[in-house]
Amino acid sequence: MISFEESIATAVAATGTFKKEEVIPLLSIPQETTHGNFSLPCFALAKTLRKAPKIIAEEIASQIVLPLGLSKVEPVNGYLNFFIDRDFLAQSVLEAVAATQLSYGHFAPNNKTVVIDYSSPNIGKELAFHHLRSTMIGNSLARIYKAAGYRVERVNHLGDWGTAFGKLIVMYLREDRKTDPATLDSLTVKELNILYSSFSKASKEEPELEDAARAAFSKLETGDVFYRTLWLAFRAATLKELMRIYNMMGVSFDHYTGESFYEPLMPAVIEELQQKNLMTHSQERDVVMLDEFNLGPCLIRKSDGSTLYATRDLAAAIYRKKEFNFDKCLYVVDLGQSLHFKQVFHVLEKMGREWYTDMYHIPFGVILNQSEDGKWEKGKTRTGTASLLRDVIEAASEKILTFIDEKNPELENKAAVATQIGISALTFNDLKNRRLMDVKFDWDSALSFEGATGPYVQNAHVRLCSIMRKAGYTVNVADVDWKILTDDYSYELIKVLSRKGDRIRQACEIDEPSVLAQYALEIAEAAHRYIHNDRVLGSPEEKARLFLVQSTQVVLENVLDLLGLFPIRAM
Ligand code: ARG
Image (cartoon, rainbow, N blue to C red):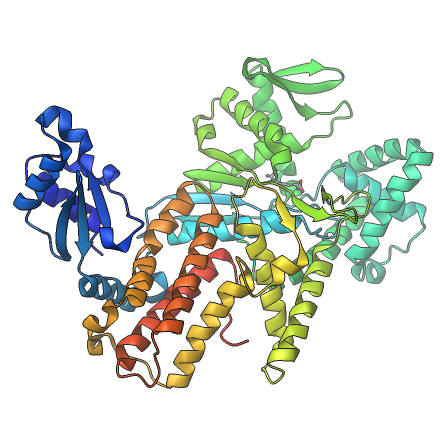
């Protein structure tokens, strides 16, 4: 599609006043429709041309040759107001939608690769509600980058290695549990969760359990076969439940390369650090000092030889660069790990890996729940008070199902639809604001069908689909009379649709799914207004109007998809 900004800039520059590249940043979109679609202030030229801005605007207006698609230009008090030809806009936008369908506004492949590390939960524990954030922000970013032309490698860096496994092993054996294959096979993550909290409790009374856990992990690290069998069983039990939840949420990955995957790659990292003289022995640990960056030392290896979280991230980064030759590597991990990523990136810098500048920590705020006295506070997993993600999803789905039972009890597959609306509601609540903001979670506002919510945008999509179903036919682009789509409601909606590519680009540039969440709201609002004011079915304008409904539906469907929301067709 042509960009109106581009063609206005070219036409203005041809009058010998502004330079082309000066125009685009000055153009603004006026609030009032009566001021046109774009406004160009001429004040910046007053000094160089030694004329009043008002005169300059009038002179440009009298000389300019209007480009195709613009109907007029009006000089008003030093501004030039440009008006787009409404039927030209309708035609150029909707023809492009018809030609490209769901990929309208997407970008051609740019030959760049982005690795996105998201969700990455710790094995042995159930997904807590707060895990939703990394999972859904990462899932949406993966879709957005793909739409923006990148090759995307989606990585789940499972926390499947470390002392936590020593704790589980110690507790499992202490409770004298069976270790035959059938029992290990039927282990559930729920049991592991209980095991984990009993360890925490028991170790308060018997601190020596912590040493036992460290020793057990060391044994695991050195390849003890029995311990390894237990570890594999713990891992499998957690993965089974993880996959069930990911499937339900529509989330997937290209690689499940957890921390354990990097175990064999660790010696090479340590050797390189030693060779480059970067490792220092301090307080019984091997560390890389980062004083020059005003950061504390990065811990590489404990006194018993076991490696640490940071060591595994160093190995992972080096592996990813080699394997995928990425242009960008994103870590969608909560704000609390900022220091960790700064340290890892700087150690890579010191190792001489110039690509350390292509690594980005994409932090986000926490989920806050309201306590009984009305205070907003962070949910806590360790003490077991945080809600489990599956419980929250279940509760959300149940609430929506009650609603469907009231309004549309005959709906097909209503339980499945309710789950999809429930998950989408939780997702939208998470994505609607800038990711660094904490998310206040409140049932009523997240699940409402009014306001800035998932159900609200899904409902707009449902209404569009229902008009198409009732019509019973689809309109071909060649049969549309564009003049019909020039009233204010159609025009406002088409303007919104035309911004899709720009929003994808923006969301990708600042790694913000919220840009698209806000865009989904804009489409939903403009669509609701259009449907409300321009009667589609049974009107003399039916064909053209139905075509706009079809076009809006595909644009909205894809925007929902880019956010990781389910584009429901009936509710
Ligand atoms: N497993 C970690 C946690 O739950 C997150 C891992 C993030 N990714 C990474 N490459 N460090 O806190």
